Every structure is written in structure tokens, then in C-alpha cells.
Length: 228
Image (cartoon, rainbow, N blue to C red):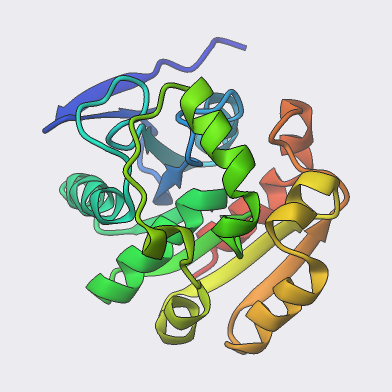
């Protein structure tokens, strides 16, 4: 199969990458984690494009040599700019957000109350950032991320944003060690109890370190994101 061509548009300091899809069913913004554009992003975007979804992804400020600093406030501003860019093509926009990126997405939705965002997939919700702070700061430094996370950022509680978010959220959570460090089963059940419209689907393994696991997620993602 011919490899999908990745295109890039520059919006301010951000480089937005995307795979063009003819007459897409929807447009999905893939929001990555705190460390930059991970190896699973491109194969995930390719799978989405093969199913009629036009994917867009980007590095936040402070990641991947992008100008600026990685903080919650700046990340939310980055998401605003990416959403406005994608809406310039098509108002049908949704999110597929990962780990710390899911917290930035939730804060964006809380502050913007964006009525056009109807569907959000959250993979590996980072329920308590502080719990992984030592590991995260080491990885941020190893990945050369210029970050300026406040104590409030590290202590962010996603429940308030989930409570008031009008979009339907599908939480996809793996039962492996990494994802249970991000959020335990008890915490995920608490998250779901806050909004009846939201759902959770459990998986045995995540795809953070094994791209082949994406195949076990893609049907769930496509079905949810394209559902009217």
C-alpha cells in the first residue's frame, strides 16, 4: 500500500501535520502527550485516514523545538489555534487525546464551551499528574521539552471539566502497568460516574510502546468518532 503523504501547515509557532482525505466524514485533532509527537501518532493518523477521518496533529509549544514553553495555559492556547485552523476547513471537528494531552483538551473544552465539538476520545487519562511527577520531569528533560508547569498545573483535577463538558466522551483505558499508573480502575469508574453520557471501554494493552496494538483500538475510535 502506498504510504500516506503527510502535509504541513504553519500556524504561528505551530506546525500542524495532516493527511488529506477526500470528502472526510469528520476531522479529528490528535492531541499527544507531554513529551512531543510520539511514534504511535503517525500510524494512528494513517489508520484514521484509511477510514474516512482526516487527522491533524501537532507539537505543543516547548515540544520538538517549537517556540514557547509547555504549560497548561499555553497548551490551551495552542489547541484554540489548531481548532480554529481545522474549522477553517470543516466545522465537523472532534478530539482523540492522549495522557496529559487529555487534560489540556478538557481544560480547553471547559473554558471555551465550544458547541462544535461533539465527540472526544480520551486514551490513558492522566487522572493525577502529581503521582507521576518525578518520572514525568525526567522524561520532559530527556525529550528536551521546555516546560513551565505551575503547581496548579501539576495538581489539575479533571473532574470539574468532565462535569461541565457538553461533548460526549469515550474513555479508552488499558489494564497495563503504565495506564493503571495514569488512572486506576477505581478512578476511572469515578470519572464515568460523573456524567452518564460518557462511556469507558477497557483494553488489555495500550499502544504507547507497541504500535501494533493500535489495530485493537481503531474500530472503536472510528465507530465512535463517525457516529451521528
